[in-house]
Image (cartoon, rainbow, N blue to C red; front, side, top):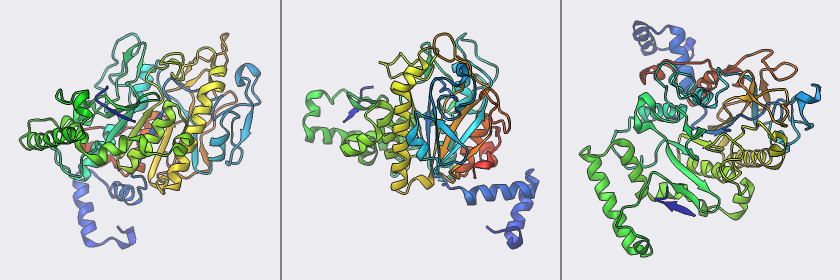
Length: 464
């Protein structure tokens, strides 16, 4: 059910004269031959056309998911066993049997680390690649101006490549950056970094929410006052009213009376293709069952529909609150207590089921090769189990799973120490992961600089 109103050359040996002239011009601008070749290589070899970010808000435990340590003492390894994967020598926690079977499509990062153990700050770092302007529970922002969300950067850069006008244009009805889920917060404090930031509000995400009882909700789209429940029941009156709205949208956009974001949002209300992409009632019961009838599962299905509709960046928030007990029991991964019970009963089977279904569905539809899927949280959990059968925050070492979009499956990058407490080799950061996503979708440092941003992080070349 859909509920409205509630809520994108040659080698060195074959470079021609024009290419050398371009190199010369680039050198004047501070780009070396190597820089120019990297730009060309990024554009020529980009595989991904879309990104799905599965944001595991709250911080999953690395030991109880994708970096178990079966030989560590019990107070570190926890009660779960391990199972083999299709990657030689790599084992997963026994709670993830389906994902273990999909590791021929997956790459596993095991040595991510971040700068803070505060959800708000680490969340901002994860989504933007920088701690600048982030705010923790103390309410004091860190120095600097916040960077835009990764989704905003990808959306604006790709839209700029297409040279789309600021105003609404037929064929650009659907917004290029979606978030499925509520606004991220901890302790009722919204985090910094989910929006366009210095790129402007036009590049904020368009938000959808999935409610297992009510279906897809579109908070930003408020139906006009004249579309009362009684009138909505009359199809002819509804169509007439929507036609009038569509006429007004185009006129307002033409004269610049509406900002780009609002114009695009209203355009989606009258675009059958856009509305259809939100509508899970068009999916079979078998497909819905395959993804799982949880909020996260159906949100992953919705993400696949948006990618089919050529949305370049879709972020699926596991939850809006970090706490597991919040949000009607469908909360985050912040398991300070009852970690193992919650994982076994809810979180692990939901993630295993839904993520696996998403990979299978994308693969069967021929979309996985061009869709980069990333699953990651803001940090990991302390290796030693606490006295409440939980794990505390741990920013020094955690995991991510990556698939599709040119990434080589069946491999892992980075090895943690004997207790998954610190990287033993190949330390990685959220900025590196963000740079890798941008690389996979074909963005260059030149393009990032063109948006007024300083490139951060290094491309994790081992993935390609």
